Image 1 (cartoon, rainbow, N blue to C red):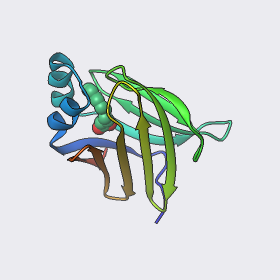
Image 2 (image 1 turned 90 degrees about the horizontal axis):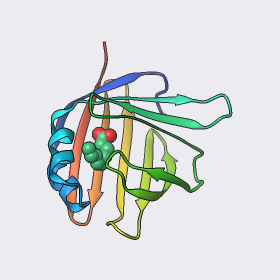
Image 3 (image 1 turned 180 degrees about the vertical axis):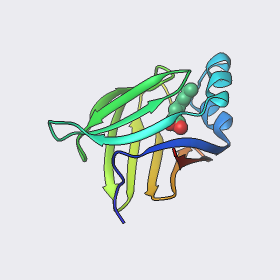
Image 4 (image 1 turned 90 degrees about the vertical axis):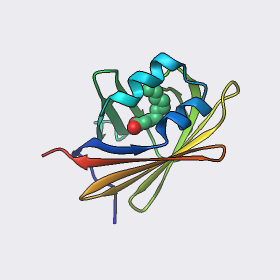
Length: 135
Ligand code: DKA
C-alpha cells in the first residue's frame, strides 16, 4: 500500500475532535466552527518535488508543502506556530507538531482507496476522523 495522490477526500465522521482541540488550547469560537465544517483534503506533488497537503472548508483553506523527514515551520488552522516533521510509513503519513506554548501532537493519515483515516493524538486523547472519496 502506498500514499494516494490527486484524490479528494471529504470528512464523513469524527470522534473526540472537540476534546482534541480543547487539549490544544483552541478557543470556543474556533472549536464551534471546527466541529461544524467538513473539510476536503487532497495530497498532491508540487513541481519542485515537495508533497502538498491541502484542506479546504468554509472555515479555512490551508495548505502545507513539505519534504519527508525534514522539519519545517507550520501555522495550524487555529493559529499555533509549530515545528512539524512528516515521515512516511507505507500508506501512512505520520505528522508530529511540536510547540513550546501548546502540547505536542501527532496526526497519522492513512490513505486507502475507500477512505482517508486520520488519527490525532494529544496527551491521552485520541481523535479519529474518517474522510471518504469525493465522487
Ligand atoms: C483535520 O484536518 C483536522 C486537523 C487538525 C486541526 C487542529 C485544529 C483545528 C481548529 C479548527 O481534519
